[in-house]
Length: 154
Image (cartoon, rainbow, N blue to C red; front, side, top):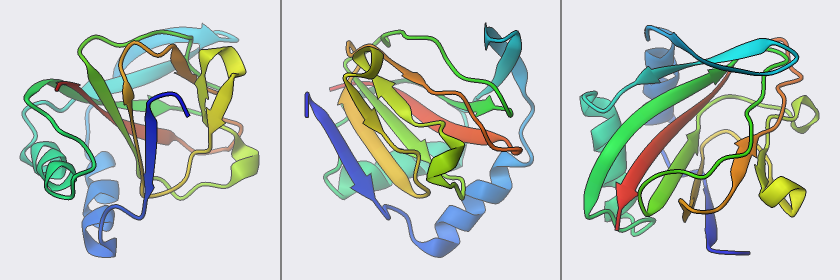
């Protein structure tokens, strides 16, 4: 793996349920249209106490070493939406995957144009160097796929 850490079952069941319910209450903005003219959405959550609390949990568990938080947001990929390859600002990106998901629905994280893929799996945290080119593969399910992202300096 190239500077990519993957952690499974990072939150307790009750805290994960809280995160899942909170996602249903967010206000979404169109963020981009990349695949077959299907857009995806995001919600900036930098001021959410819950998402700052999650970052503290990840730091306390030693899963990441954050010196400074740049921002937090949630991406929502509706059915048939995916992302386009990009790198992030900051030093380290954390992606948390909160949804119940099946592998055949795709939506995995694609690294360096397919050099590596990391499956979308509920309660998974992916931590990687922000300069790594990555994107979300197309969502082949009939439900929304969420990812919580933290952009940090380490």
